[in-house]
Length: 225
View 1 (cartoon, rainbow, N blue to C red):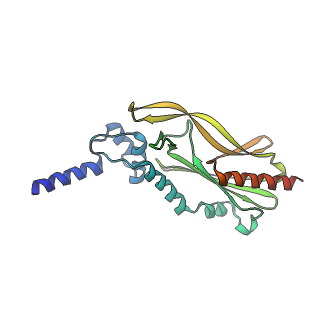
View 2: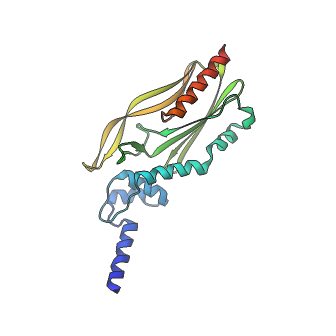
């Protein structure tokens, strides 16, 4: 009986601590918080005997919970220094999406064949009677690196609201070949064009974003009439 218990305890310890993880991975996760370790393990690929990985759904939940708990809308209003009553020309717009490209550390296709990366971007846009205010935050879930940017544009300077789909190169983990390979992935962005400049933010294309962009275009036409 005691032998069985000891074996179970040892097995559980190996499962939780990932003793049989590759040396390269152990170096990458050393000294990092558990959440970051889980994210790096998720993207690194399959480990050794009895090693643990979070699932696609668990990674999605981690990202969603971070966004929910952070209340980025209020952070955005505080950062740009405005009360919501001052930016109620139309409803605020929220864009979100994965980032891909050379500056993104990790990416993989999940079992659902959807691409995910270690970087996620959240953007809020607010509309006053004369200006558009923008708050953009990029979160890297594999490290302590968060980037915040704010912009503001007068309607009279904006020439277009648009969506852009670019094909970018990204290193993905191939679980069958057990190695990384460079693949092309479509990156969807929302863009604001002004003379001499263009603002981009990541977005997922869906019914909400389509309606939001059409609403912004209608407001822009109204302001320029």
